[in-house]
Length: 358
Image (cartoon, rainbow, N blue to C red; front, side, top):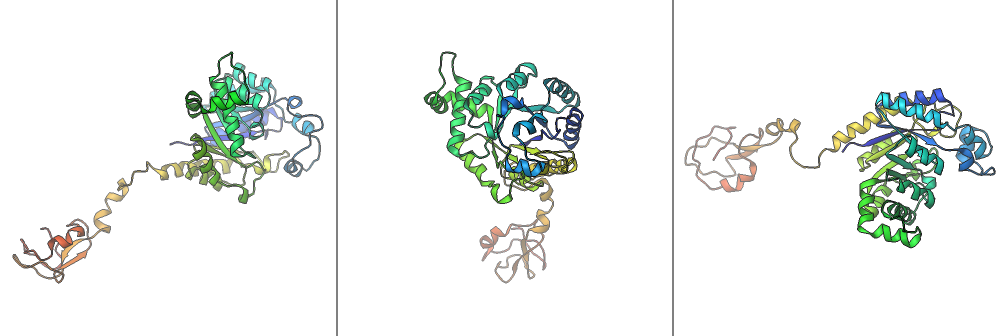
């Protein structure tokens, strides 16, 4: 299966339109399937008093309100329109995360997106989850900071959004009913990918917990992926080897740029290397059928062994331990037949080292 690779530009454009287009170029040239941005109005996302996360203060080296920081990182709807046109021209899919209702409506109604990404921070934002599901779009759901119970609750909201009739009222019982319904489960399996994630920038290796991918997959039987905030490329590559069908990874043009996410991002060459490594891992995973692969077949005769004569054997001589040996090459009788030949009269004559065929 080909892994869907999302190059997360996020807010690494720093609110600069020209930089946003350069990020699209970098994602395309690296071989990503999707380049993803973030769509929001800062005033609708945070209160005036909301404080920055510790990593945001550290990475920006500036302590200010989230509102002040995020206001500089907005991209206008008009820029979004130009970005998706440019992506279509290049042949890379445009995706964005909507952090508020107006932004979601814009992505679906104006940009006509058929796939949406729900960030970890909105996993418990039931009204926005419901709006996402009601669009009917495929959903990629990040689960940073979440418990299994919180993921299940979110999936219940989404199942309700996919299946409810206009007269159905939302609420906890309705969400639970939708989640356990046959139709709800069918819709979730068809349309939802759940991403394991560690919400820290950069995420410490000891907190990555890739084994949680298995836990999520076993619990919900949905497509599983991984959204990576670690440094380097090896953890997302390992996630693919563990079965991730989608990988999301932040990237930037320069890790030393000012902004909250650059430090936990890959630079273009690193992004290209990650994607190349993932494509090799996909090839290495294969089809799961255990049997000789095309490149191995020529080596069977070289590496395996056959029954051979260790002494001169004449017609009628009794085949025994003293005149049968097992040596390469492997294009003679399989040694599995060794015991069948013991104490039988030879039907042919053999010189020392001849392959035995009886």
